[in-house]
Image (cartoon, rainbow over all chains, first blue to last red; front, side, top):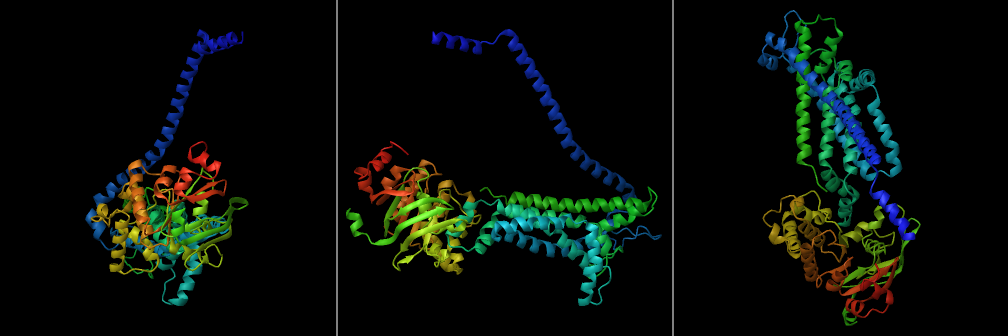
Length: 320
Length: 259
């Protein structure tokens, strides 16, 4: 008796009626259509960012063409003066590149050591509570508007530096670079710290078991293991410094100046673009087109750093 | 019991308790560790054998909330290595460890083996070269790697990496070597080579090994401690444990009736 009931139940489950089969099928088709729609939406979202990048590159190149008909690429790269807005215009990008590289260099001499040391401390030494308190404050540093940093450089750091070097001009790359370095610290430290914390505990234990101290473990095992992530952090910092605009525009000066001395005043590529973009130059004038050539140069510079970063990441990627 | 009579005492756990926070993981453990012998710790998962092993090099000090009670005395100086007055780094300088999963550092083969020497401040090239070679020979790896000492250690196979970790632990001339399930992540061939290696090392080094594999314990060790729920149920000559254990529980475990 009991057995019969059981068999019946099983029978129903195994052989669904015709109407049931149909409703299941239509349900499946509905699901397929829904999946397709979602997939398309996701694809479009991904496409939009790629399309934007290509559109920017296209516009930079397209708008630079008339500029390079006016002057040659060779002249652009070798001329030592950048005065596209003057009557006797000169189109050498080098003064702006020099300004960008010097401010970036100063910023990195602050941000890379400081950022790495902070990351090592937070990842390997700081007690849990300290880390959880310090990290948000550090990340807040990255949230300060850059124009505030610019004024900080101009009205606080420059006067302080002038006490040490009385000859320092009011606008100078040293002050702008130092403050920019402080601004970049959280970018470097945050990504480096994540990379170090991702180093598996069994590698640290291996080091401690050999009689290593915390410091030896951090420097000899954790940092080399996390090197690909740390390199990515450095590249992120460099890209940020190369493209940074407000701090240098406010504190480093607006005069293109071919110099490698940080104590002088000079304009960077980004500062020049701001200067022109804010002015009232007619569209299509050579001065207007010069910002596209400058923008293209800036983009190529960051591209080179990103390629180096990509290579470093691949070269030093560790499989734990 | 003949082996234990001849052997001298290298270390001894005396009424050792260990706590992870409030959880008492080891309960009153007292066993000897004989000099130049292999002592195996066996028992089901979670019985505390790895916890006990990691007391010997104060590995638990790395994590907050862990607490030791009782003693592990280390001879010849008869010092309690668990005493808060003893620097865990000093302990680890004398007692080295090989882990469950091979964990070479992201360095060359040479630098991996030289690591323990370098952290001791030994940087003289000739000394390092000699000690690295001896350690690699003792770990039966020298012939396979002598032409590529400066390759990255990650390029070695799993079994080679584990022998590299053994060489790293050997290079510092440890007084005791701790092996925490050293073959559990390896294939049978690599396992056989590690076991063969341990057999060669047993006359020269004091070894304490945790293993899940009872055949392994029976094959390589001189003494065996069977642990269950944080306690040592039985400690004896390996032969005695595997042929004629005193306790029913031990027999049940080694014959595969539980665990």
